[in-house]
Length: 161
Image 1: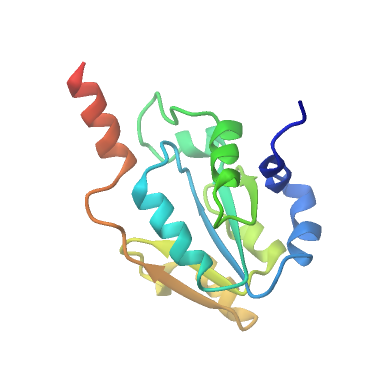
Image 2: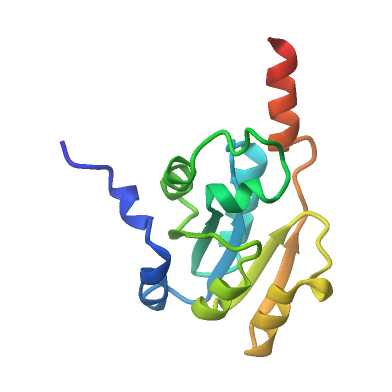
């Protein structure tokens, strides 16, 4: 049996610029840990995709995710599993990884047309937004779906045991 076709959406960082160049424009970019996929993630990603022709998702590597301070045992799912789940989503066109604290370097390489962040980000304070806007792209905040967070879900699971 051959591997699922969605795995073709996963691409190493060094190969990402060439693959992004072949995507339908405008290219939308977002990033995150996406540790335990939930309805809030799926809704956010569908809304992000609706802003363009393609959606690129950059996943924090395991070491990058640990540096975010979400807990010593996070992420619960490793970077390959998290990327595979992202790639399986219809709204996602391409998945890659970044090992830095922010995706600024990757964004500078990929030059997406639209940067999307979730929640209450102030785009004027994000270096990533300034990079995208410097070449004519735009930065958009999509509000979180209330009641959904991986951290809250992990707490709920742990308290049930």
